[in-house]
Length: 237
Image (tube, rainbow, N blue to C red):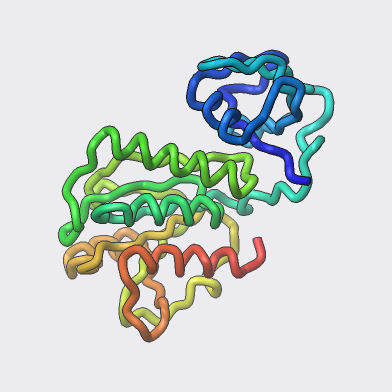
């Protein structure tokens, strides 16, 4: 039987939770005395018990002596090096769908970008909050200990990265799985529906980005990043 997972601000012997997590506990029909798995979104996890549960407030007691894996099975692992998804702004719910799936596929962070052909030029504060909640819920569901950061949009020219950056680009010959040596962090860059401009691609390549192929078909802007991350996951990490 799977155990319910609860996001907490920190791992401490006694924690008071606010309305958001209380709603989650109530939706799961949990009660005082039930056992849960608390995780802080930064890699820490511990078994816990619901000591109190009432409207808008809950108290958890954590067993910090049980070890990080106690009470939980098949938690999975993070990638050997952090993976960042850098993605152009998309319209509607497409970004939420990408953030949700990218979290399940193991990214450490999502960097939103404004590009020449981006579907949108900005994102509201409330939508950014929602994307972060989507990442948290996806991490909870997929039993990850780390909740990816979702970073507000910046211009493509200001994107920086550690390690290797790969960019999906029609006509490229390199295959992403052939480039993965996990010697350094990886950034996966995916563009908008209209693709990157020639100037943008030239600038990226001049800064050391590596173009990769996603096969002979043209993929939608919300499909391409997940195809790239799927190739990463397919290496068995």
